[in-house]
Length: 279
Image (cartoon, rainbow, N blue to C red; front, side, top):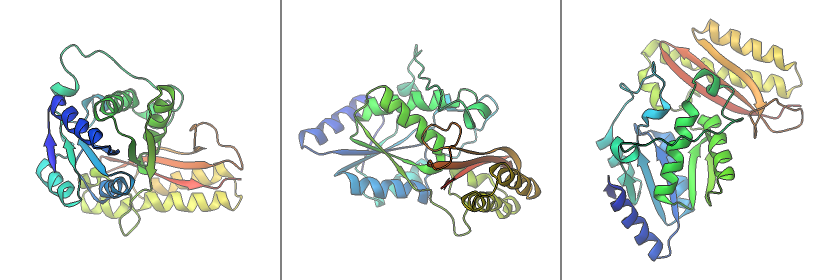
């Protein structure tokens, strides 16, 4: 696996792939890799002859009181995992390469970025859209893969790609889960043992609510029950909402819907979501 940290070296490597007529699949990450990320890499290897992974802890998507300074960084371990997985190129830019002095451009995706995490974390999705647009311009992939655990992020990126005419096939990959159902996340490393044990209440509450809604039970009651069960498990709930899967707006019976939640336990904020056949 080739590791590059400068944009000129990245462009030389990508040019080499293109000269050989090879398509490129791209997996953007913030590192601290786990089985969820490696599932994206596995899908990328099936999708194209060349696989590029980026690791960049993006300061622009962290709020002033969020965990930028303490976000887990495991560069050497991550590189070993990617090498073992057959990744061709690791793009590992420093902050000064991604945001050189004078950088002043911001990308905002209205609508889909505004509810849910957009309301709870002002400016977060501007940071996501800006860095992903830059990464797309740098890597020039044919295919880009994102996990469905960050479902709103995936929706924002799909909207941006459509609006800005990126010629990229954006693919979502199903959420990877631990044996007890908790969605894999780099932030799970923050959980103390007792909080990790209690955290399984999040996917369980979503599963119960989704099944209730699919049986035709009242949506507001199902959501209220999910919030109450999370509170009883020790969570502080940011939101539990049913939305249209494409727009993240109001759900409509018979349309593809998504049940999304964000909640904090022991100081760690977790997100999760499940598909719902509402109606």
